[in-house]
Image 1 (cartoon, chains in turn blue, red):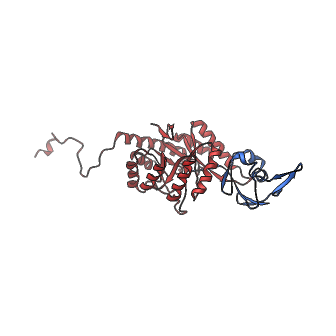
Image 2 (cartoon, each protein chain N blue to C red):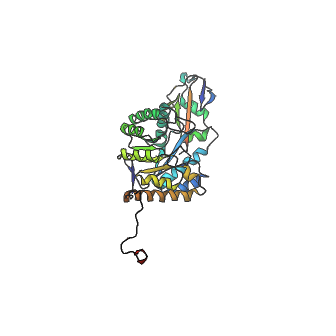
Image 3 (cartoon, rainbow over the protein chains, first blue to last red):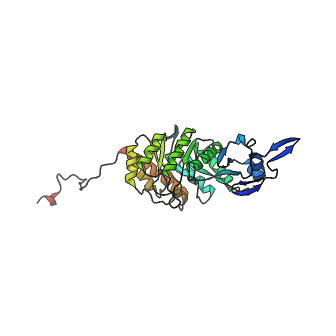
Length: 80
Length: 264
């Protein structure tokens, strides 16, 4: 499955769904973040939007992805 | 004298940005020297290799802890109400605050706020529980509409962001102050000199939000201190009540019993 994260194309290794212990597991926002972010970034503070809509942190593991989705992962930065 | 923003009492009337300083250390020293308890910051994309934002975030957290202060996230870069709404929700989760400096830009050349999208975004955000501090132009009717929607704080510009041109239209700013006596008015953007800030405080503005004027000074720490003094001076002058301007000269020294050279 192909999606975009922060404007960059990303091929999700698992595709739309994968089988785990005989059960079908769908690909979620959490899967995409795990693949895209460095280990250090995963421990940092960030916030996520999917197709320009906010995704609450508690929903990362539940929000399913489909081909062509676009994720924004934003981090704190200085501002005026 | 303290400033109150959405129920929080602050010791300083200066709100300050965290961008454009020569280094994070100088940023921290300057903000501490300013006495400000409200610092603005933002959210941006970051590629997986980059970690500079994390260092700044650490500094900002230290400053807030040290000043017993508050974060004021902005929606810089947003051009529509929908974009600003999403970014605001992301900021609220990450920074754990319902305060929001709402920026919705309508023109890329002078970064002028879009009044129509700004009103739309304000309405959406207030319904969603945000305490909105809208950055707007110095238009009385726009400020009135923002106040009517429920903004306790309104932030008209002095001049376009980062220009340092000071108060472009003092008449408009004075009119907004006079017509919205109960609103908390903070002058935001375009401040270049401490005397600009002092002038706004003399008009009765409740506070000043600035960034470039301190960050781009040759000595940001000293300039931060100069702004703190200017705000105090302007505020005291407003409370003391300025004299009325007069069209003709009036001698300060008594004219009765003048010395001999006027007697003939």
